[in-house]
Image 1 (tube, protein in one colour):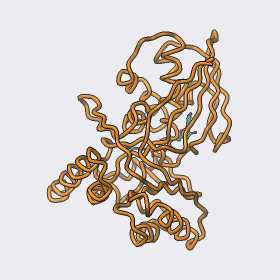
Image 2: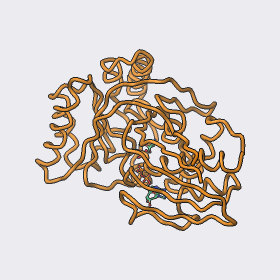
Image 3: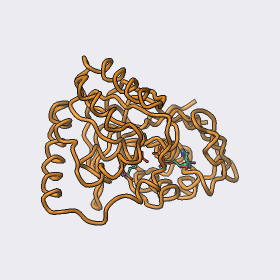
Length: 293
Ligand SMILES: Nc1ncnc2c1ncn2[C@@H]1O[C@H](COP(=O)(O)OP(=O)(O)O)[C@@H](O)[C@H]1O
Ligand SMILES: N[C@@H](CCOP(=O)(O)O)C(=O)O
């Protein structure tokens, strides 16, 4: 049996829609695989009641199919689905690493990115790879049509997950078809600033580069209390705040010393609008890890 832990991820980071992603230290999914004549899936853990065990409908089933690697697969969910924290991607990335090893397929982590993205196509309609790339490679990743660029990073963050559900498929439906040139120029500048910040592990530069006036404003409408939570995090010292992935998770970047007050402020702000939430105080961290038993 092989076991893989794959982390939650936060995609977009505001200015890098469908391009940027980071691996988070916590939470994570754990996937166990054993060879079998045909694929079966069992799901336990956070939000497992909302996750299909049918291989045709689960992201790990798509990965097993893509690698021609039938297996008995057990998923222990640490990352709740429809969270904006790359829940579907965490399972897919873990399964890709586990099944690649189980069947000696010899694919590199980068070669597994399009394989794991097959799972994302299954649930959101598009094989966007901005969650599976950091889940596989760790750190900060830049996904383009030409491939993936990765840098290790360890920027402190708070990821606050409200007790709301926003499906990535629905949140992709509000993305505008086009944008004014001045907004595009501003966003490119911010994305460049953020990238430099990641290479320097500089929370001030990363936070400064997170603003996006094109996609994020449309999505914040889907997250009750977002403006209040964002302001509370900024007041508590966050250097930047944005929607995590497609939401409803909210990501704050910060200095380590400010993590605890920011986490408290975000939870209190959701609470003020009657929504329970949980805040993960973590850092940008490593990608999927394989354990042989
Ligand atoms: N292994 C899996 N883990 C999580 N969600 C899955 C999995 N397989 C299929 N799904 C489905 O994918 C959807 C969640 O994915 P998505 O909307 O992208 O949320 P997230 O932002 O958390 O990844 C849910 O409808 C869920 O049932
Ligand atoms: N780029 C995608 C990322 C979706 O991330 P998720 O964690 O919400 O699945 C998008 O913004 O649609």
